[in-house]
Image (tube, rainbow, N blue to C red):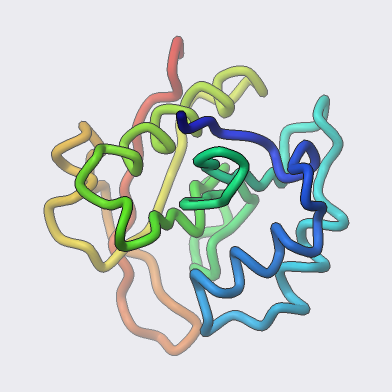
Length: 153
């Protein structure tokens, strides 16, 4: 049985949650995730939040809601970031489940839209995300921006 939890409610603790995010997104330093998660907002504040998809208390996926996703468009927010499903668990619509969870969480915090940036082609469109324009990565390369109305918005 899978469930999505805020990392603050993860029984193995914040360090292990940070390690899972780092292992999923190895190009980003563990120290970054540890600090971001440790200083993440309490449950009543809108951003940032980090979530784990658990299968019997073992992480198999993750995502976050953040002010920005390392992209030039700081005028757009919140962003769904770091969506990941472990390869053996793929093909079960678990990514879609986390996308829906993120939209529901964004709406609960009062946001009308949720944004993301990706280089995946076709994945987010099949779940109703709309490509709106390009922003720019830190190295100046273009980055596709998608949005979707928050659940209930």
